[in-house]
Image (cartoon, rainbow, N blue to C red):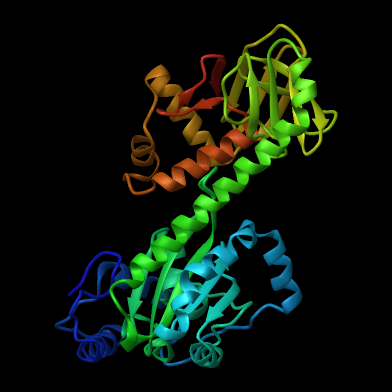
Length: 396
């Protein structure tokens, strides 16, 4: 039995192990018993797939999206800018190793596919093509769909796949995240004939993901540097506290205040920034110059729990109200309860999800919360900013 990310150990007799897994698959899926137990990640996935009513003996629904929709998703994906880097890392060995690179979006839709012509031909017959949704609910247990469901890297070998048609394959998949926010962008997968699986495939996929995420961060820094260059003359003539931010609220330059991100500016709409209070954004190039509009630097926030969670924010003469998700409301209450001591990412994961295994998800949720409210949450540890006064009403 193997455990962890890799489905095999070095030295595994692949043909024999594939036969053992096939007997296990037939027994367990059929409701019987097997001497060889499925790995935990496989068992969890099979349980989910069986509950969804999928048939292991059939090729379940593929129904790929039209090419126009695939192209639209490609253009909208931040991964478009790093797909060539992934190809250089992985497809350099594709023909020699008979493998296939597949990159999906966060919905599990295959957007890019490259690699060995022979393997691509076999993948076509499986419906493993651009535009297909490769989630567990569509095609059963597979590395892409299971990585999405588990929010973790997954490797599957042979009959660990739910569908019999996928048994001749191995697949190794890892989520790729926006390095700025932690948001899931998609899945990077390497697949090929099962009996060609090598233990180094996991390292190959991990290298590709690390490279892509580092390139995404580098491109982000380049965009901020271009914004600083465009705004340099205006910044040189500006006195007092000021922020220069991009269209997503990321700070390219700060004077008189320290923060990495604020709420997304909107044209002709004031916004509140901790320690600056009410601010007026002025568009400059591809970004915004943000300066205080008054003297009030305190943010007063009221979290109303009498119905669906809502937050009311006031500062200076600016008041606004917004709906909150239940998760964001829960996070705000936890941070309010822990005061200036705050919570580490692991502690917040434990408090929200009951374990410390959801750190990436927690970071993404806090990032989304800051997108709504601005930089009201400080990091390392997570805590409410000193400039925030939070009141909770309607709590049972």
